[in-house]
Image 1: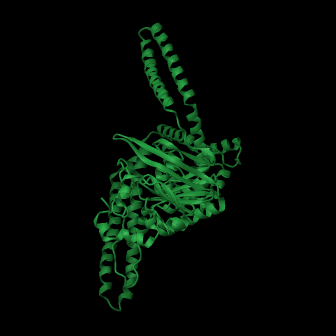
Image 2 (image 1 turned 90 degrees about the vertical axis):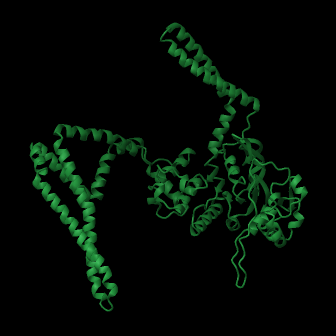
Image 3 (image 1 turned 180 degrees about the horizontal axis):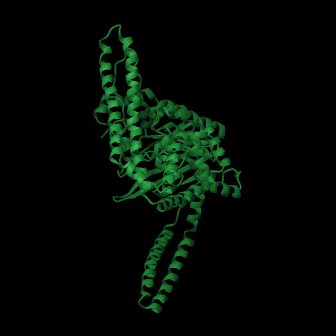
Length: 577
């Protein structure tokens, strides 16, 4: 198979307050057409940085290396002299901008001299700005190229599905945005005239739908509004307010409140008594159950009435008094002002809503990732979806433009085992159906074994072993890979003694730490002076199987090599630390 993605000699660093920190040390890996490549390693080994550099979203500086995707170079290198020139021009642009503002202020005191100085500053700023744009044109063209690639030919499922989606937009808005960005939306069905007409009448349509769907809730509001308008028109507002605020009305209101409270408290006490009595009965329990159900049901109805209806009545009473107290002319002015402020946003929202053809397109995309009831899901916001559903939506967004390469950065994070299996099967089906190559980044060797065709193992910013799935997991030759396999928990068989969970002693070294030899040697049971002084090179241990180790001859027997990680002497040494 031909190489779709080929990363060679990639070295990057981050600028920090403590100086540059090298995150990747000459990383080389490749993903073939239609292949699922698994990238595995502990946290801090550079897996996510590699993926972000590939799609141009990393905030690090690239020192050297090449990333070829489908025959195109994805890394743009600006010469050092050009960077210095751009930095100087940026400084001058800022200087001339401040000078222009000062000269404009000067015109208030000396109009002629200030205007002349302003023209000079404006010309100088224009020259520096245009020079920057011309010199920086290659980088701008490359950025436009990367924007056309991201989400189109290369897509990425980010690490955390719970926060990767925008909480302010619906599912259909976010999926359609990807299609719109890359010109993949279907032709619209509604012409511009009908779209404008529909937007104009959208407030009326919204009101009609509300009355149709919630008539029981709308009827009291309509009646109250008509009554208030009728009282205003008959000039009886003051008398009505006096009646509502009279001591007799208030007294009746208080009596109603006390009665409702009492009606809810008494059944509650009865329920407590009924909860105690049945436990002391033998054959009479059955006779007590109907009474208990009746009391509990009455209590629930009255409690809900007190909690909801009474508060609604109280608030409605205050609102009615306020609306009657406001003069009729002022009341109509407020209503019209609210309508003027509310109607245009509703109309604009309707105008910019998705066309029916685009909505169907998004629904079909959600169907491809097996989301149940996609017609309802497209109208939902991310917080209304479960973790598995959000991950499916993320996959739908990334697969919307049928990319050639899908980068999945721990796609099963925070998902339960059942949902994990569904997501992995879904990604395999997409690969088989669309021919999409997948770069699977994960910590889980079980996921690697289940889904991948090839495996790349990374440690401390470097690739330490790569090959087919059978080669890397079946006969690993790099001690770090052997240690990862050795650390997998194993179910204890019958009669077997319980042992401690096997581990690799120590931890991934700090990127700031300098090593003369192999970066894994402090944690390796086979390390010697050669490992501490000379970095190992990738060597081909079998056809297509490469490992970076000085002692691949000691790792031929996997069982013996794993036993070295469990040896008491090695564990007591703390892994060489």
